[in-house]
Length: 125
Image 1 (spheres, helix red, strand yellow):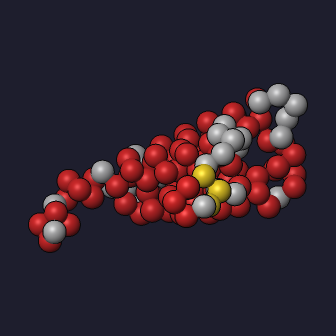
Image 2 (tube, helix red, strand yellow):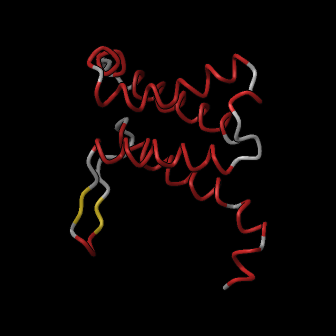
């Protein structure tokens, strides 16, 4: 067990694993997945919990990335990175952001999901 934890290659896979969690939680929050239910514990994911999981995954992935310092990113990358958490948090708690995302068709939620994914990708580069 100790050798597995000390193996750096194991840590390099962390952003990929966290990326899967981030993707599923973000898809659920923005309406791409309609139900996530864990049968063993009889738990159904809520949008609030999906937002918390997405933000937590974002922080873990950013902290485990090779860059992991805000100053190492260019200004446009900083704006891109900030857009992800703003959309995730704003969709849940800021009525104006929620209204912008909730369009008649699926354009708003799809765009919000894609922006959050680009933000995540830039953060973990």
